[in-house]
Image 1 (tube, helix red, strand yellow):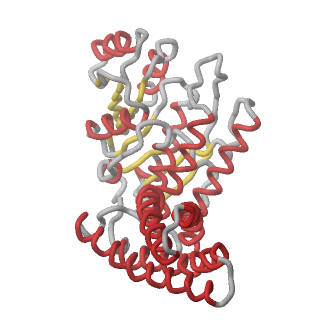
Image 2: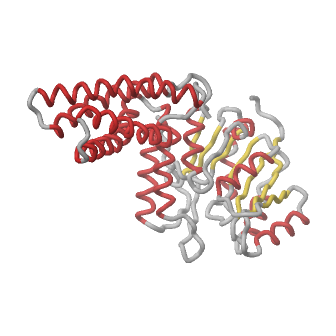
Image 3: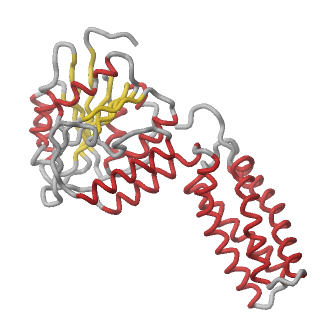
Length: 369
């Protein structure tokens, strides 16, 4: 992409109960326009209960380059961004929160790598900058850095601020991405998906004027846990095999615990040893399957539902025979029933992972977003 004389930047502003700052935000974003850069500002009101929508409509009536979209029910930041991205017509697309924690004048610098054709995505970092940054919550910063570190481990990027609001894209890039997260989990989701697209990603320092909760900050601890889940969920299917196996240890551990408890329950009811082992294994396999597609692998990527289930049940059947055989052999060798089952579970863990990774949920090459 060659440098052009003029271009359009679409700025998507997700808005929920921001009547105190929305008008100032819009004016400050529009002020960065120049003869070379036209601004298309898209406000997406996410069913605000205050006067945000009224203010947004007044701004639209007085500015021809302001577009207002509205959700009838509150759906979250991710949903608002998806709505705005679909409507964008600019060469490049930026995210701007309505609360003015981020300074719109930074957009002038952030857009430069895109405009010059050297980047596909540019992220603004609050931790790289020498610009003014409001001092706020220590544990928030620790949480942000931890989530960024974990995200980097899965994406193999060296970002300093994964959770940043300021993310700028070439329009054709962001409009290819199907956003699934409704709330603040959209930040790690977007980073995961642009990482998988093998794009040219740049990071630049920005200023930051954060708010306290008394001033209207909305993100909370539950969003931190959701971000943790999203990092794993949207990255694990393409992570290195060793990292996938590490994640699978938690899935396999949960299923193994269910396997053991069910086995003991069936034994306590007087069921035969082998029958108890087989029944417990298959029930635990269902737990394993659900956790696998919820956290680690992608559902119906190569196979349809029927084929995926058929292949899964086939692999489970073979491994169940191995599990039952090991359990019986160890028991006949003098081990207790519990110890025999534990040894079989550990041995089956590696077979289960291999079968799921390479047979049931094989990750195809090519696009994954």
